[in-house]
Image (cartoon, rainbow, N blue to C red):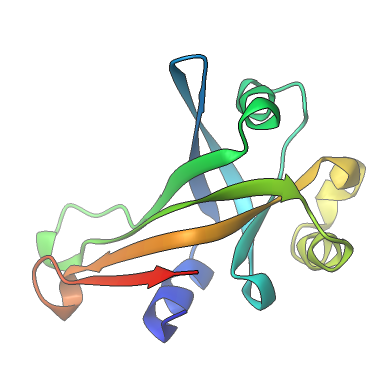
Amino acid sequence: MNEKLIKFIKEHHVLHVSTYENNKTWSASCFYLFFEKNNSFVFASDKKTHHMQNILKNPYVSGTIALETKEVGLIQGLQFDGVVKKASLKAKKAYLLLYPFAITLISSLWEIEINYAKFTDNRLGFGKKLEWER
């Protein structure tokens, strides 16, 4: 994955994930850890939530991470798609180092394996896009 994408991802901590089930969409915001070893996002979420109920039926998701700004020249954002699975033990340990308060959620840690990512960075030129694919 490109250095600029990784730097942007590591500068943030909330992603927005969208799910799809039975011709309906749903979105949720989640604290994440970027697990660079697997090019994946690790997040905590209870199986009872609306988005996890959708994911358990259809693990394919899309999402975004965005810098909130009104200045067009500073716009940065990542769009991605991937597949959700139970987080690996290494991913869980890394997540708990970053978010120790999530220890009670250890059985509810998930990993989004990123299949495709598109990073827009207007600081590199208006509408400049960098893409990555697994």
